[in-house]
Amino acid sequence: MTAEAVIQSLASGLLMGLIYGLVAAGLALIFGLMDVVNFAHGEFLMTSMYAAFGLYLAFALDPLASAPFVAAAMFVFGAVVYLGLVRFAMSASANAGMVQIFATFGLAITMRGLAQLLFTPDYRSIPHSWLGGKTLKVAGIFLPAPQLAGALVSLAAFGALWLVINKTDFGRALEATREDAGAVALVGIDKKRIFALGWGLGGALVGLAGAVLATFFYIYPDVGASFALIAYVTVALGGFGSVFGAFAAGILVGVVEAGTAFILPASLKYLGIYALYLLVVVLRPRGLFGSL
Image (cartoon, rainbow, N blue to C red; front, side, top):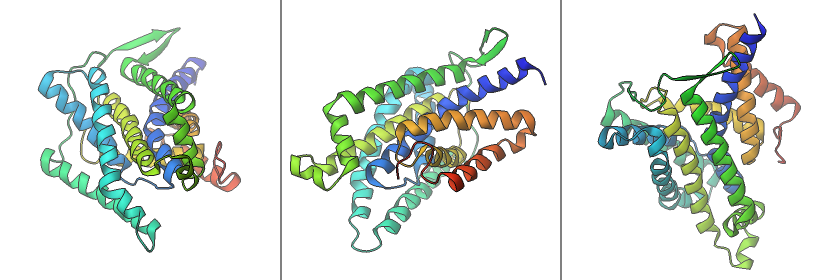
């Protein structure tokens, strides 16, 4: 165990942690806005990865170049899911919470089944990309170019999200709806429109993450499951509904994962994440940055 090896492990964890934060951001946004857990979040990620793969096959677009198009498509998809499914689940006259859970869980099963039908369970990958197989060496530390690009995309996305939330009328309406969805109607804000746009924004964020992951990760119908589990843990650690808490918690999760893999066998790399999660749940149930 050398200092260089430790720094290398932490650097790798930091890069993946930024991507984990981006994956979790949409989940945190939707929960904070509506108190709804999207159990199809992993399948949103899977869909965006297949979309990036399809654009590569059809137009030879590198996933980084296609990321804006994938994000735009997932924005529309997220809004359609709210308008076509979630808003009806929310209006259930009894057991609305359970109806919402089963609605998004059923959507997840449907999306995964359709992916298996259309694309088969085979693993796929993008064989040639701008950054595939390239690394950047900084002070003796090797940084994989795809993960580095993904981390930069994550930072840019969170920067843009901060500007949207704090500097635009939509962001103010979003925050007001998060605070009191019932009272915003008194000042002329249509909460259902905000909900639809919130779901669209959440879909766009996970669309960016999916396009980034497609540059270096295998694409298959169940790919979203493992990332969704990490996203749920990240949201819980950061604080339910705290988008920027998810950002910070994603970094923490990535570093803990890398540190665990450095100390223990790689097959046990998730052990540290879940141990940290249990510790936070016991000592600070609202999460590190939550206010619930």
